[in-house]
Length: 458
Image 1 (cartoon, rainbow, N blue to C red):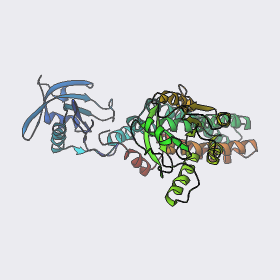
Image 2 (cartoon, helix red, strand yellow):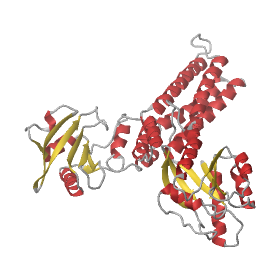
Image 3 (cartoon, rainbow, N blue to C red):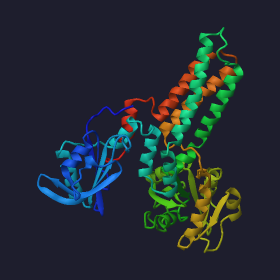
Image 4 (cartoon, rainbow, N blue to C red):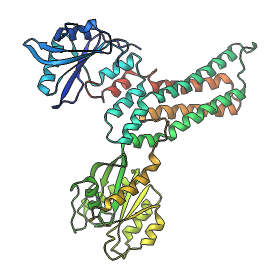
């Protein structure tokens, strides 16, 4: 596919804040011409006279004259990020200078780039697949080590290559089915039922492997939805504040002070935790607090990680027992808090109900290390194996899931003796879903939605 727009686009591609250097990127047919009109090198060479992957040092000018020194870096088509001629002009940091540089480029005929338009052109010019473009966006927004590694793994195109290999095996099978159906009396190709079943089974296994890794990939890239639960005044808010590094939740001796969900984002063991401190679970006549309790129970059902807090210094309560029942069969860390006080709770019941148990005193800052170690251990299930393919969002997962559904249908038909031409129709449906995954066949609306989430300049 080729980009249909002949416009030359420009945008600030570095952070819009004071920095050591800032850069304006241009891409399109007139990128070199426009850059040459606002940049003059110290050597006297024009950008149009140098090879790709070369740089020049010089000065930049606008209608008012020279305003800064700059470095011009040239990438010639098609060996550039967008597949077009690309020039990157870097000036000293500071919003005044870089905005003036951008305005100079726009005055010379460039158009301000839309959000994600550089990457969109890379996709339209065949420089990357749609799934790789999505991974690039995830890499830019990564907030932790695991998230960045997962995004980088997805951005290298392995998912696209695997989906293309699966698609090619289906194309080959469809070709054999077509030849067999069009020339049944000719000895052209063997498309026996055994061949159909063997090929479809192999494809099913590959697609099943992709879908099974979706939860790990989603957690690695989107963060771990983590909820802190417990009855009132067990120390949930203190733990929340300790993990956040500042007083995010209100801490008092009064029961029911946390009435709604308090949220923050923290990094633990390379993972990003989307942390939620919930209302203490108890029976209450307070309408607002009861709504908070209801939301806390809902969060338990959806969370990828639960931190269930119990007060060591209090006898076990009905609320404690309810929390044990709600969380014991989930990915839960049981935190027995206030272990600096006399033990009155049923510690053995708690320990026998959970795999991950840690005893701490939340007011002791050193206890954070023990909790962090327990969290890291609980997150091992989400770590990605080296070389594992990563599905990074619901769109990709939906494409693979629909392809798998059609393959399962085709396989069942082959096993039940359905004619190959009828099976071929179902295989075509799976193939269409795989093409949608890589972007070889998708609507303009989907493409525009994906790239609208990028920052301007990328």
